[in-house]
Amino acid sequence: MKRTILSFTLLLTVLAVSAQMKWNQQFQNYIDQYKDIAIKEMQRYRIPASITLAQGIFESGAGQSELCLKGNNHFGIKCHGWTGRTVYHDDDASQECFRAYNSALESYEDHSKFLSSSQRYSRLFQLKTTDYKGWARGLKACGYATNPQYADKLIQLIELYRLYEYDRGSAGKNSHTGKRPTVAGVDEHIIRIYNKNLYLYARQGDTFRSLSRELGISARKLAKYNERDKNDVLSEGDIIYLKKKQSRADKAFKKRPHVVKAGESMYGIAQQYGIRLKSLYKKNHLEPDYQLRVGDKLRVY
Image (cartoon, rainbow, N blue to C red; front, side, top):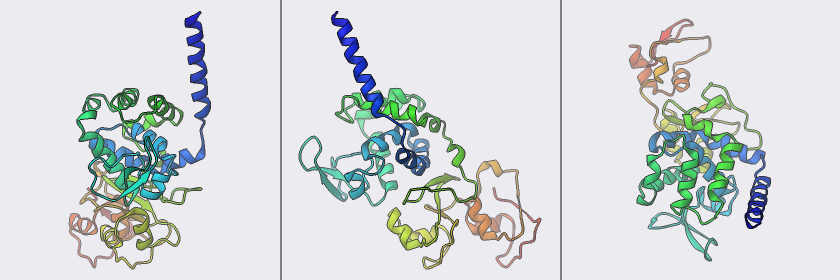
């Protein structure tokens, strides 16, 4: 009889948790916006992208929590020796100290460093990046959160939104295509990954200064990364990289030259492949005043 009561109680708990975990567009928007950063962090630190995204959704309320809105803190990381900007928030105790960041990108990078540099979480890095259940349960066992259902919540998010697909290192349908994506209902830009870099598509009215305020990267640096002047007018659909571009394209183009089409420019081609303009000229032994012709074949790798 006792076992029956316990089983029934457990069933009610599971049903209650499941009932709360329903698909919604706000969560999906968050995933679309940050999945490529999560993949990049996985490639650098071996933390499953699914875990990073699930934690981000859960800890920040898909970017809508007070901590996230005030301090770009997507993972609920408290100060613990932090020397940067801080915000205070009621958690386990009143007005606890939490880390604050200039951008979501900084928060994601600090989350990776926080887990990978702490002895507390070291045993998790013995797990495969595809073992999201092991990671979720391990985070709870190591004391990342006090919520007794923390691991179950992460696993439910991962399975409901199929986040485990990103643990294979692919951005899926929204990989680099050179076309502007749909951003329905999302104010911030979707950040994507291509050729070991992060990028976004400019929208109408964007400037390097407005992007700087959103991303926490100076307008001067953004312009420099994209080989432009910080006062340049941006056009809708322009590719804007968030870090210095590579000297060559992805290895998939090692034996595939770019065939010039009507209306293309050397700069536009360099942006398309995420490479520096001077590298494109150098690879093809061309001078800066060279006039492109339709049908020209350019090395990009």
